[in-house]
Image (cartoon, rainbow, N blue to C red):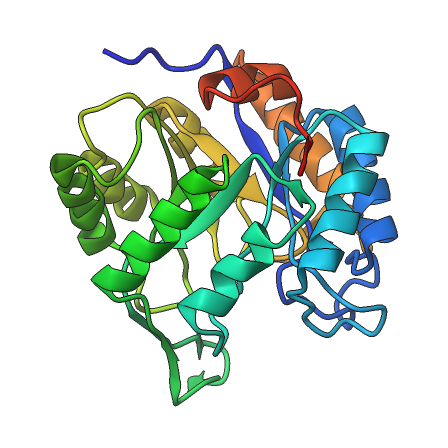
Length: 297
């Protein structure tokens, strides 16, 4: 049996697609992301997940911006790096992979979203759907293409599971030999995205039941919401946590906190549970990564 890590993996989702209306501290530029990552590392984070953004906040999926961001993060701290490949965008699979393969520097992790889904955020306060025609397409062929390309680039693929069906797909990929082990997986829950399990103990427990019976390290992310109510459940089930201003402004912590302050709040809860965050080198070793975190081509 693959033992649960002594330290709890903490992945900071620093920006995603978040704007700055609710919290002006969302980092956008490579320089801002790197500075934010360094502060999160000091607070106890294990890894940083980021989206390329322009100075005005627009999405920037260029290989040049990815490389620049990774270079600055490596100069600033030791965090495991985890990029995006254009999740939820209209980029085709070739464009999405090119962001990674054309970059001069490679991250530790890159995501593969396992399945096609409606992008269906529902606002319970107004009882309205925020998007009506959103569709995120990841055919089996696309999943194969991205997974093969990521592995070929010397990067660990992250199995992003939006549903039980995603985890069943992961098990099938493992059965056919097209997904490497050890596995890194990210379980998605949300109270706004209806395609996912709800962000509850029951919702998380059901997903965890379908994790593959191979060496696996996993985290849970709460899309569009706070991770704080799920810390105890995730840790009890043997998982880690993926969270940050990309998902929630975390104004419940008081004012407009920075990502490092959110990390500190999660670490404080881990301490109360008698646990500690995983150090970057622990997570990197778990992923089977070379200690040299930056790959220059």
